[in-house]
Image (cartoon, rainbow, N blue to C red):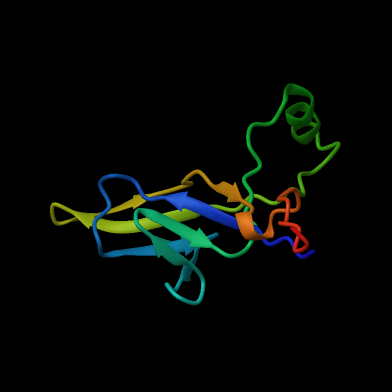
Length: 112
């Protein structure tokens, strides 16, 4: 069974209907790169944020012992409010496995 994942980003309350979306600094187009479901942006690919570094990982980076190669996507939204252009950066990313494709969903028995 194919499992498809979505990544969702909730728009901040101050964002109106007109806005621009950027993923890792690259402008995204509604319809081809994401779709809008109410006040949520839905990306049909897995996005990830690295999160906070622990002490030992931070220390190893600081000392140059190790680098960081984890996926760390950033979703930013540019919009206007009160005549000023604002940018909401690093919006939280939520991962979703659609119910119809979820591996643990029990399928009805066709014999019943």
